[in-house]
Each structure stands twice: as structure tokens, then as C-alpha cells.
Length: 334
Image (cartoon, rainbow, N blue to C red; front, side):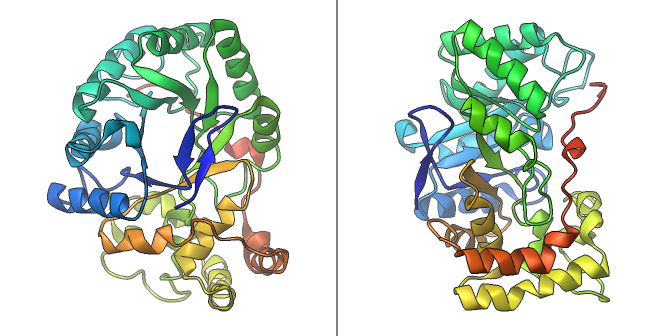
């Protein structure tokens, strides 16, 4: 496993982060989820990402139980706040001071830890003054409940505003967590340049485009039974944007490129996002422990310029690049 600094800080994270978004606490049994976490640890992953909204807080509980007994100082545990939790009442979501201060306590209790290494604003909250949100984060850092602060899916302008306030309030905003893959490149035009300017790293989710870049979906054929594309609870709606024959055919063109590089298709996809110097870590998930070892094979891989060009020739023309696709919900209604 290789490690990278997160933002303009002395804090290091593993190049591969284990995330339990779509699986733990909902799709797979808790014992299998625990086996996945153990497999991640055995593979050298030390960074774990979750959120209070995942499985309506159950994912945090599963992760906390799975990590119980590990040396806390050797782990980097991330969680997020914004989405609706609990009974989804009027103050059970968003980035108000009330919701943030209550949410961090709930997350720490479920994760069975005194602090999280990184606490992230899961989206931008248009209904709460940014000053209120950042002041709450500053207080959480001073209370020792979070060491660093990050955000997720913020635009370049939102990052600049948040970073400016964080400096004024005396804490570090060091990361952004956007979607990023060969097929989803919307951060490249604006978010990445702004982040480089501010000293903010990307922790990217869905580097395999919800599994499409694994190559298991074939043009003109139905999705394999039990795959994400057939699972309404597991992101079937999100994956639909890629379930077109032109995209699936282009993805098949990546197979010889992966073989020539000595990589599996998932490894090629994860290694590709890690070639971006502004990316500190790629989040991978798993519903089976054996999936972890394959993803970890992408750590430390250097893709030559010729390989990157072949990838771009194969799928680059089909990639979404519109910066306006980086967005948060206009309202925070549960």
C-alpha cells in the first residue's frame, strides 16, 4: 500500500480508501461486511470512509463494530454529515449548527471512537449560512471530536468560500470528495485547479463508474443477475446513465489496454484516477472480501503516457465533463 498527504497537511491516508456506502447495513449481512473490513485491513488499507446517512446510520454502526479492537492511532476514519437521518424531522438533516453538533455525537457513538480523523460536509447546504456551518466545524475541531474538515461535491466557488472561512476560524479544510472516473470528469475543469490553488485534495468516489468500468456489462446483453444494475437498493438508478451500448462497447475496448498493462479492469480504473496528482485516495467498496485484493492492486501503479492516451481514445469522448454537474440539492427536504 502507498500513502499520500491529504491536502496541505501532514496527514497521510492510504491511496485506497475502503468505503461502505451501498453495502454495509443494507445490502449485505453484517458478518460479511465485517469480513470485508478485515480483508481491507489485511491488504494494508488504513483509511475508512462512511456517512451517517448510509443505511440511515446503520453503516457507521457496522464499521465501528468491525474496527473494534484495532489500534485507533493506526486508522484514519472519515464520516459525513448533511443527509437525513433518524425519523427525518425538520432538523434531522442539513448543515445547521444544531444538526452538525448532534450528528457528530451520534457518529462517534456508532463508530465507537472519541474522534474522527476527517469530518465532511456531505453536500453544500443552500439553506444554512456558510458562516454558521463553518463555525460549527471549527468548534468540533477545537473540542477534539474531528481532527480535520472536508467537504463533498462542492463547486470551485464553494470551496474557495469555505476555505477562506476555515482560515479565518483557525482550522484546516483539506479535502473534497467528488465522483471521478474515466467516464465522469466534471471536476477537471474547475474543481481540481481551485483545489490545487487552495491546498485541498480529492478523495474520489465511484472510480469504477458504479462498476461499469469493470467490463462485466456487455453491449446488447442484459445486465448480469445480482449486479448493481439490477439492484434497486444498490444504485441501479445511478448506473443507468452508463448502460448504453456505445458506452459499454467503448469500455470493452479497455480490456486489451488493461491486459497490456498487466492489470485487471478494476485495477486500471482505480489506477487511472490515482494518476491525477490532486487525488489523494480512491474509495472502493466491496460486497465480498475477495474483491478487496483486486482493488488494492491499483496502489502504486504508474500508467505511462501512452497508456493514458489509449484510455482517452477509447472512452474519453463519452466522458461527462460539464462542470455544472458538480451540484448539491437546492433544498434539504428529507
